[in-house]
Amino acid sequence: MLKLGNKFANTETSIFTVMTSLSIQEKAINLAQGFPDFDGPDFIKEKTFQAIKNGFNQYANSSGLPILREAVAFHFEKFYRTKFNPETEITVYSGATESLFSTFMALVENGDECIIFDPAYDSYAPAIKLAGGIVKSIPIQMPTYEIDFTELETLFNEKTKLLVLNSPQNPTGKTFTKNELEKIAFLCKKWNVIAVCDEVYEHLTFDSHVHLPLANFDGMRERTVTISSTGKTFSFTGWKIGFSLACEEITKRLRACHQFVTFAVATPFQIGMAEALKVGDEFYREFQKDYLKKRSLLLEILTKSGFKPIVPQGTYFVLADYSNFSNEDDFTFAKMLTQKSKVSAVPVSVFYENKNSVQNLLRFCFCKKEETLEQAGERLIKFASENL
Ligand code: PMP
Ligand code: GLN
Image (cartoon, rainbow, N blue to C red; front, side, top):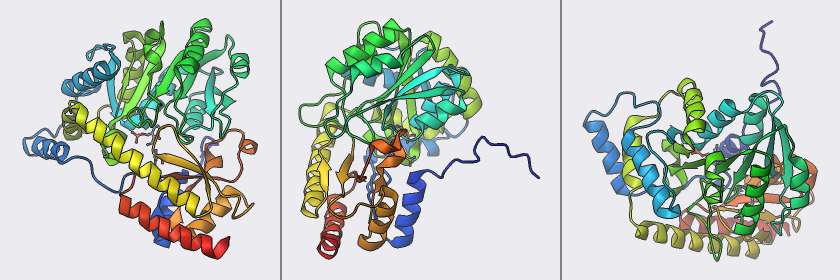
């Protein structure tokens, strides 16, 4: 008998792998896994091709190429007016996923309590548990996006090590307000807790909602790990270039861990993304405008075909209630929808710690060409005509 142990004995395959495989098998339009069906700008590709041709093909510095760390500092200062030192406070990883993992491994010790919002991105809870932490969760009420701050306060105690905040939030689309962030900052300071802020959708907010980094709140810079990824903003999710900004004391620990996870990240892609992060304001205006159009299109399609979508404040995801169609659990419905309509979506219960608090919701992504969304719309309307 192999001594496999129990660490991963009951771990399910990621929902993104499951739904993408099913989409391929069923020749369905994949609105499940969040990746664009279009490429990012040519100038980023050109810069990367050139880097490969010019021989930038060996290991990068473990904490990231200096030009990329400088570009990350430039980008953060430009948008949020706070300086970080590229030499000592910024680190490059293989995507935000590795940044999150290295952060939890570096900071969480056996028995430490870590607060996450419920629902949350699927990697947080498993990574915290692997590091020996105990997950405590606080619900985000849907569809109002409200948080009970009295309940949140009860989760804090001497054992609380960190709080994970994802804003704009995957999967709900919630974008935390100034008032909410002030309350979170107050609790983190009161209980000497580190905030791990996943801000990969920082440039995807809509209507009157704006992204505010928690690190910018009074007294938070020294206790926040801000994590982002160039994958979403520049539409190259497969390049997996992510980064963190944190004070020197924390960064030392993050780098110590990162050096044993991947050591360094692909050199030419870092050169391409260093160029990308220096892009002018027009790019971000167009990016938001494009995504606003895509969001409207998906909301219209879902409404027309009998779903009840919740309007997201940020991200490129829409949660939609399918109770007009079925009372079956979301896994069963997501699978059936993929097979019958040839459009796939993610069952939202995978993102919940407390599975009982969610019913009849699927997550659809709109990081797709308009023609793809329109084609998905035709398929969903046909499905509705046969199943409502
Ligand atoms: N955090 C959130 C909230 C995400 O939605 C994703 C997925 N794209 C990631 C982290 C992972 O980002 P990356 O692809 O850069 O690892
Ligand atoms: N972040 C993407 C999503 O939420 C997928 C990431 C992944 O495939 N691991 O859909």
